[in-house]
Length: 234
Image 1 (cartoon, rainbow, N blue to C red):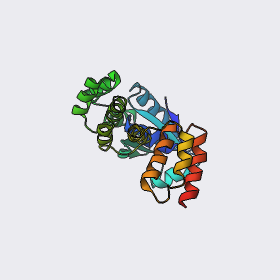
Image 2: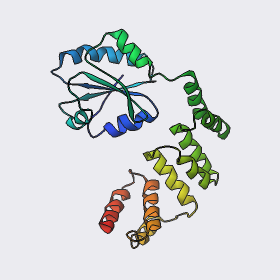
Image 3: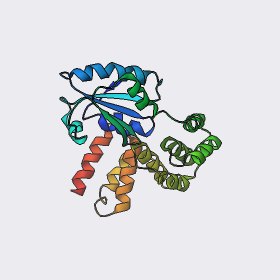
Image 4: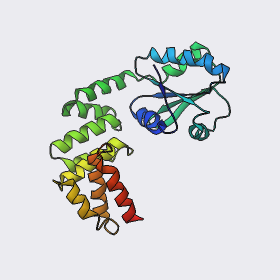
């Protein structure tokens, strides 16, 4: 199984996804003969990992921005992305054994698999054990922070979230933690009120952003308020 990615979806489908699952990026083009040889091999080997590694295929002709970012000189070009960073790569068509060794280097260790099971358990004791094993594990930190917010320990949640790079999930949980100390009953009324002071008052601006993060991108009001915020700031 593989996913097709584009310039527009690369951040979410590759960079963000790689924070929880290693992603192999296959840069190819329709006219590239070696790409057609390598593609099925990559798909076969990645399929054998049963979801422990993701294959993302990107057409360089249709998506020049990502190709430029990788400074691609020739294709096929294959990159391994873990925690948002490139950790391995190879160029050109390779035999199945070489591809299998490349993918095998990305498979989680026994300890990482144990951490994953503890995160899936989701209770506080399991999450604390997971964090003792991998203090910077994104999913464990976010899950524990969510639990702390729900149990009125927002300051501890914010301290925990500070351990890891900011992602959409981190921003969302951090926003919930900050709002827990100053709850908002009516988002529309509060956002309208905060608009008057967001330009000069950093605390008001942060609260405005926290409410938007809590509402989420799927709330139809979010784009409207983001536009209003931009107009006030600039």
